[in-house]
Length: 459
Image 1 (cartoon, rainbow, N blue to C red):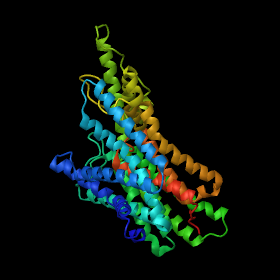
Image 2: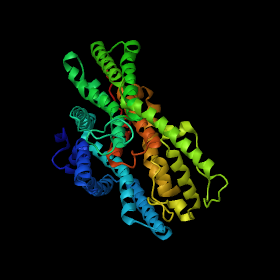
Image 3: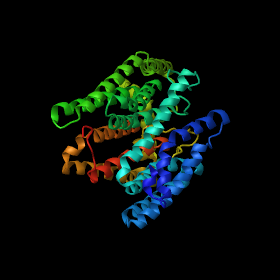
Image 4: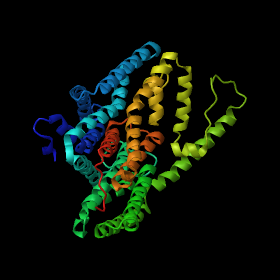
């Protein structure tokens, strides 16, 4: 696939291969954390090196292509991040430069990947869809196989200490769940594109693997996304039967039957799915916490207190949905209100501003980004995201029918799932292993639609 890039495009080839080896990096990270007991893992080292390389690559590509606005954006971003660190150093009682830089590196990683693949796209030319899609499917097949093999061999790592479900041999259940949810529609696109008749049925194996793995991990995100995407796929395959006359009906029928089979397999498997058990345990755990809090409040009534604010009280349904992240949100907002003007503009940074307090992120990405980078930093971070999305929607207004291709719909829904997970559960824009897939989808939707090269499944 990468031969189409030519002999002189080493960086573009490296970035394309980088997509395929993401799960391998995650496995090596997990191995280092669980067996070598070190946070300086091979995955961290490789991604840090790629962070530096892509920064240089974007700079030279922007100069070469006369994209002064991109250079200006990164200069502004560098200035804001410097002010973030400087103000944090001046304002915080305890300031850990290493932790602050680690957090910045993880969150800015998405921006670098977004612009890196923006430039890579121009070198892939007519094979752009297959090259990127094939590498993602290759990686997700590895993920699916790891999840299945680890369960059957009894070597899987539990997703939760209190619940059921497994994350295979990966280190983070939240991250691998988000990756599978975001990439599931991309794998389904691959299956649909390559299945023309019954002898091509094996192209649906990667989809079956990844969708079942979404159930194995035991998260609400995994369970909901697996059923949602296969249901949407069935609808997308059925619609052309009624709206189009010049369609490949044999291809549609084969894909329809196979997608229904996958849905049946998921339904059967989900009867004992971990996500449902975890939801029940979350509810019971929340009720126990509320009961204990009520008893503590009753026992402390009438006693003098040194608390500076009242305990956080939020809606039970919201707390269950957010896994109590709403409490951290309220506390972080109080911290932001007490911050000085410079911190409000350029952020609180990663570590807490309070003395003798433990740093705790909200784990709701956009809120974490806002409080960490402040008003100016957050707006600057959001500029490329808003621009890419607005450009995508603008292209739809010019050619509305483009959106109704199966690729566009599934890609867009994958992006929505990713953004939804980032809002409710975090570990997307703040996790390099996850954010790279969001970056690729955004570039795909922007570039592919601006060039109007979309094809329909039935053609």
